[in-house]
Image (cartoon, rainbow, N blue to C red; front, side, top):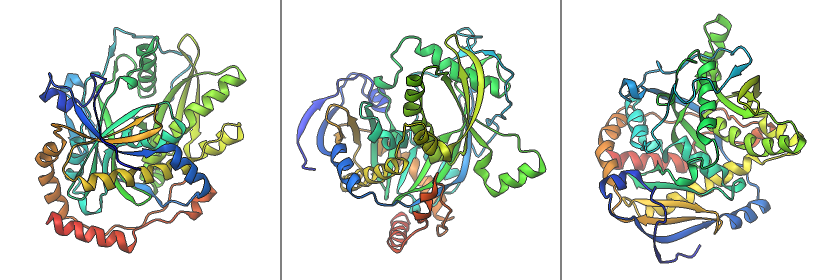
Length: 427
């Protein structure tokens, strides 16, 4: 795409929280420099649906974030915040406790990429093998772009020491500006509470997260993903299964309004299945537990879905989505982002998908602080990981259907050479 040079000021007061904390009276002025046209990509992809390398996620570490009442501390390498799943007795009134017993997340709470870096440092991750470092939230947004053309997203980024660091940017578009949004959010947290034996109080401020190493196309990614709960694997047979596949015990919990009409069912499949699939697939979580509620907010049924089967089940119901296309788009978009970020190494960049242009726009953030933040946290991370560097091993793929046989995993000669050069720079 041809570069343009347009100056503009953001039209939203909710931009980059770290910048606003330092410069509360100053708008963020940005210079538009390049675009990634989604329609053009879709046209080319339709003509050449290439295979893509994907490796099954590998658990690197975890952390527990304590509740606001306990100080909101990050406990790296600590799994005490992982609750155990227990099937609830139906029916359950999901309205119970609202709003008196609801401890909400702070809307202005930041999720800085430094949290992921510190978790990786504790786990002594070899940064030479990492092309992208991010929370799963950012990858969800990128992957779903081809089928969510009306959903704007913003991601901040900086290329530092050979890695693209992606930072979450909260926008007003993600605030749930619809009637009863707060209550519906509560339903989700309430469902998690009743499935994990914590139904008296609904505290949304604590979390358990996995730190994962994934392979997405040409990108080795260190990604953090919040996980809802895990099965009770205390039985001997279940312990063996968990040892063979450490991710098999984890569950994603979701609530949904029970559809009664054919058009409601079709919309449910078209809107929910792709999002649930990409979120769970990226983290390697194989099972969804769904709580179906009625119009009044009463939990009426529990369903268990196999994540790998979601694409085929949606297709069988007449609402197909191309799971491979979502991954190919993410791979190409990340490559474009990395190319431009590397050319502007050390600069604070902003990538924004704008529905009105059907394109991802890249611009610089004047007075951005992301580079300075990375410099403060990264030396210890790099030093810790260099001492523990090991050559990457190949991994089995985690694709959801028979086409997985076309996917290759592992590293090629170019990637190994790049890792060696990166180790030399870090040393």
